[in-house]
Amino acid sequence: MKRSRWILWGVLLCLVSLIMVSAAYAQTTYVIQLGDTLSSIALRFNTTVAAISAANNISNPNLIYAGESIIIPTDGAPPPEPQPPTEPPPSSGGTYVIQPGDTLSGIARRFNTTVVALAQANNIINPNYIYAGQVLTVPGGSGGSPPPQPPPPGSPPPAPPPSSSGFGVGGQTQSFANPGTMRDIGMTWVKFQHKWSPGDDPAGLAGRIRDAHANGMKVLISVTGANTYPAPDSIDFSSFTEFMRGLASLGADSPDAIEVWNEQNIDFEWPAGQIDPTSYVNNMLAPAYNAIKGANPNLMVISGALAPTGFDNGHNAWADDRYVNGMAAAGAANYMDCIGIHHNAGATSPTVSSGHPGGSHYSWYYQPTVNVYYGGFGGSRPLCFTELGYLSSEDFGSLPANFGWASGTSVGEHAQWLAEAVSLSNQQGRVRLLIVYNVDFTFYDPSGDPQAGYAIIRPGGGCPACNTLSSVIPR
Image 1 (cartoon, rainbow, N blue to C red):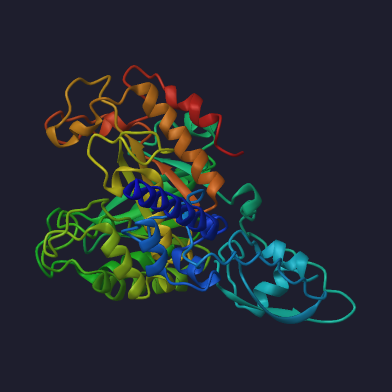
Image 2 (cartoon, rainbow, N blue to C red):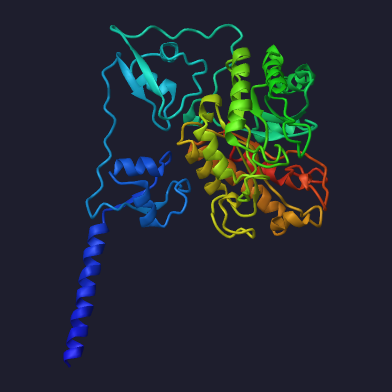
């Protein structure tokens, strides 16, 4: 009986403890918002990234996503209420730190000034390219602000403001045989890839760019090396920089965006033993950016998108999350307008983060991959998907062994998941450009590269993805 009494007391004490613990943590959860990083959340709640990670079993602090509910270890203290931004007096001058979702036009309205005045005060060449955390000088004045000045003759029309997300969708093609279909879907961009060698004349691309412009498309040129598995010290960085300068100097035939290399974290595209984000930034990205902007300040520069992979031996490949962090540490954000990103190994809806036949690594899934790249740069630059595609072998039969993870993907799922990825990218505000991989490739090697299995235009001319994409691409 005495033993039973102690057991009863023990149970009661446990229940009281559980109630106290529950009460202590009742107000210490937080739902992650768009643009949040674990470090910004820790700063807001006066705690640390390590403490939040431990409380939520977060192994990689970059892998958080909007809508996720996390515990904040604050010993039961309620979280601080978010404070609305203090409205400055009109035309008061001073500085302003850009917040996620801000646009230059919205900031101008708030401070009773103009986009032109803000751009001039901050040496902003392209008003569409600002980023969270950037500190602006707000020009002061009295008696109102000067009227907006008209753009110089020949200037391109401004991109839509981020309220319509400033978000563009395009497709990669080799032949550009279906511009009408691309326009009907709502695509406004086309991507061509150029396999560069020293001595190439950038004027050789002018005809393709001119044709795309004539068909109402903006052009992304992705420039990478002509040789696969390049030998050590074989990249002529000086010649590459001059090619980029020449490409940006084509006048009306210049592209609208340039991607600086491709998948430089694997030895298929970069010399084995020399894979290094600091080398990429210092020897290629920074010189190319300066050359491009010197010739054409309005041209968008995109960092080379990495191969999504967890394989990392430091010699033949770096995992892309480690490479992203290395780029950020090397100052890559200073030499790009947009972060290049690939997602081409999905076999689940982009709305989920589990269930892929390949496993649980983030690179199999849309949202965790976005979090790695966006979080790796602290939200300071938008993302540009220079390849986003889903593979279906439904029209082709067998798949190469190393693409077996896609064996269960139907053409219907291919079409639906592309539309979901476009919709998510548009809604979340982190993505500036999404290039669908691909529009109309026809090459399919069941023992090698199944490129045509990614195409939205299927054998026989059908295009189930045309309907799904058309319903979600903003116009």
